[in-house]
Image 1 (cartoon, rainbow, N blue to C red):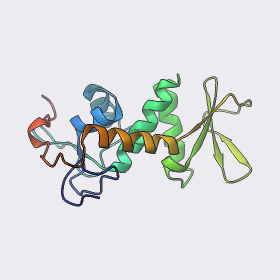
Image 2 (tube, helix red, strand yellow; image 1 turned 90 degrees about the vertical axis):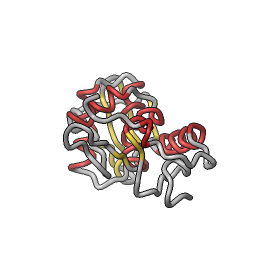
Image 3 (cartoon, rainbow, N blue to C red; image 1 turned 120 degrees about the horizontal axis):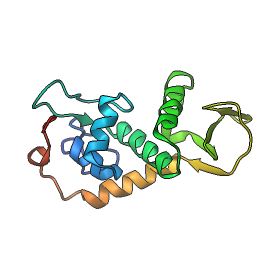
Image 4 (cartoon, rainbow, N blue to C red; image 1 turned 90 degrees about the horizontal axis):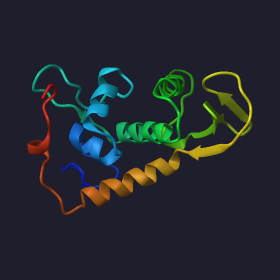
Length: 167
């Protein structure tokens, strides 16, 4: 595990975190999507937020997990407005790590298994289970992508390929 360089380990223990450009690349979304999600407060960067022209966002590893989970839900056909509600509920109501949650998707309903016997409908009252989406798998996928894109031998800083907000 690296403690001084970005992108050299899957866990991303560096206090520098990941630039917006690298975060988008790792998660598999466009920079424009990432920027929109940050501006609309879907996922704000934990380490450094944009504070005007020329400042750069820095995302923590946990932010990348949330971003990847959001992309996975969108890829499963859940609309962005519903994804927002899911994450608002997870943040405000359940004290759960996003990587440890199992979501159940039924049509456009999203449910979460809470505890051993409780399933909570995150969007509305509904029943029926079609797919189970374990978000723990998102973590492994994210780790593999980070290592593939930025192998441990890649110790160069990405400051030069960072984009300033507003450019």
